[in-house]
Image 1 (spheres, helix red, strand yellow):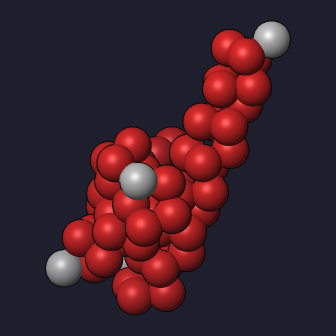
Image 2 (cartoon, rainbow, N blue to C red):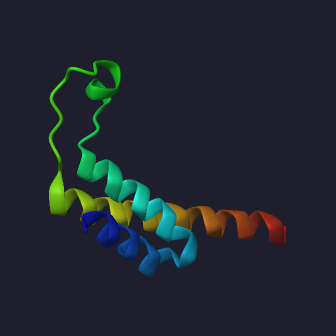
Length: 77
């Protein structure tokens, strides 16, 4: 459920391209992946829950929006 929330928050900001990035961000927030858990598989993971999914949706949406604006700017030159 949190993955879907994150995806649709990103989609509301950056339209359709933001949906996939929001889903990925929400999945990472839900699974509790950290840099330490990537290096050590025995490390404890803690899910960030609702707030992490909310933050991941906003970050993903604005990153995709920024990338879209930069690409359109460079194509117009």
